[in-house]
Length: 292
Image (cartoon, rainbow, N blue to C red; front, side, top):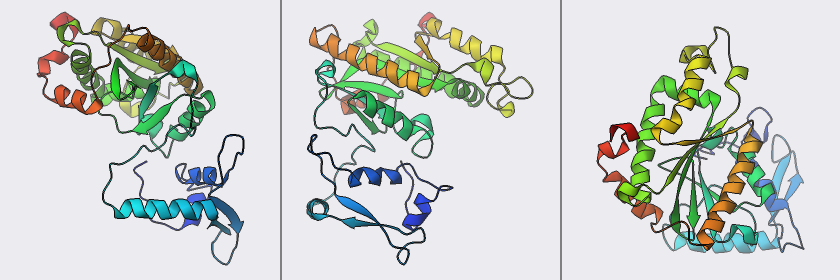
């Protein structure tokens, strides 16, 4: 996440201020001989050093790795790595060379549901990385090239909020411009998808609005907006929960792999090349299909 860790360790381990990103340190304490993983640190209890008595000691392998990291930092600046990625050395063959990239703001970011989503992807064995994405919430890479499919995930609350603040139309215009770039120009051979999560009728608050009363979006407003997506160039997938969404995304990753192997999709642009072309697109390339 983009949170600044500038407090004592005990602050981030307290149940009231727990930071999901900071708790990833526990993974460094785990070892798995069968998987070839070793522990780099050990958790110890010492109340003289910490309010909650929790401290961490570098083990031999941890000291060796820390030394290598220090040398790497001294050699000069490096591009930022992923916030999280699949913690395995190998992946299932059905995923082939495909990696799913998700935006670091997904699920509200590291302080909310992002790490829960990542934990589910870990459980399903999906090759993934968490980075900053300029367009959509999920993209798929075949090697280092971007596959022609863009997915925006929104809970029904997100739909109501986006309608209220204007992001709903703005994001769709940006995705249609991206479709032009990834889909080979006017042919637009790039799939645009909305993954809608949850039931708006179960998210109504006092006054009949969805999500928050201040957003002023009724159940009818939200459902009408979702139902209008196909006419605006988007396919729609619906799930009931975060778990259902992660299962569906894992299936899509396998489908992208299958299509890449049989040559039915074209992945030709790196992410940097894609962004460069997208930024140079005329605004009218983001118009709805009926307006072109």
